[in-house]
View 1: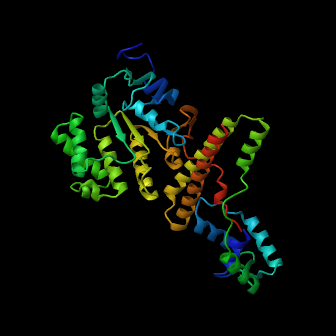
View 2: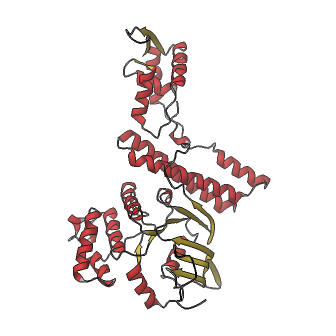
View 3: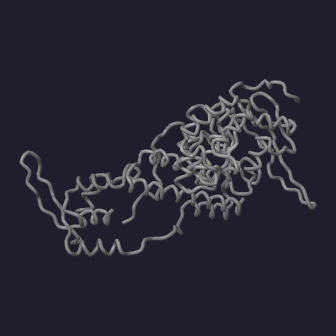
Length: 166
Length: 254
């Protein structure tokens, strides 16, 4: 979560709660927003690492709020993060590990394993479809669409495994 | 039990198949496309059949719609045993009570969109006036009113499939059978067809659909998985939207 927070701060200084709200608004309901505690802890670590600095802003009727802004090193980190290529297809896939190892050891019901996983994908797809209906902004909609395409690929792969293993 | 007598089955069951098998043979090779499938569909239910290509899902759908004849087993539709029907009786059954949607739309190319839909209504026994009324209604609902006089070839794939859906629904069929209805559509057009199917289902339409598309399958009440001609899973889907853990792909990295 470090880098998305830094990237939001590149736009303008903000306090922790504002960052949480911005993340929620940008990515929509499908995105599991970190809780406020995680955000504060992350901000403290970013400050320790010299990527942000903060100052207290005094508020008349409420407790002071701590506003964070990017340092030069923070700017550099954001640019570096955005410019770098991102991780490609998953080679480490937990389900596949289980399937391959159960194949080797012959200890479990592989059809049952595949069926349970298929049901799980279907249920996830159903939740995403429900969210997709409500997602009217571009970024949340595309996020959900991407998740759906990944799930379809997971299912296709599951079927390939079924063909090979059963 | 043979013939067309009413079965003693539960009246909620619209379609029931038992021990359904289909073998193809040629050049001394026998292929079991469907092996001993048992399935039932209740009135108003939406069931998806999924599986890898070659798993027999299209064959199963064709057997259930009378487009192919089973090697063995029984099919009961609305209390009537239909697997021994002659081709002519099946044709009548399909015209009146079964709507079919195919992957490649199968519209009549030298007729207008309106005539494609009206012809199906007329063949199902509607009067000319009824046919026109229903066609106008349906094309309106499917957002195709402006295309009524166009030739199918002037329409996009998504629009053609919506016309095919109108044609399949025009006789208010007992059962809608769909074979990969989104298989030849881009993502947005597929979603539009899917929304229309969901709406028809919400209005009480019974649907049996074959798909390899998880999005389409996940919209059903139940998902049957076929593998190597056999039903290997029959999974009820959660009835209502409820929060499920979100997939990893939604957790942003960084």
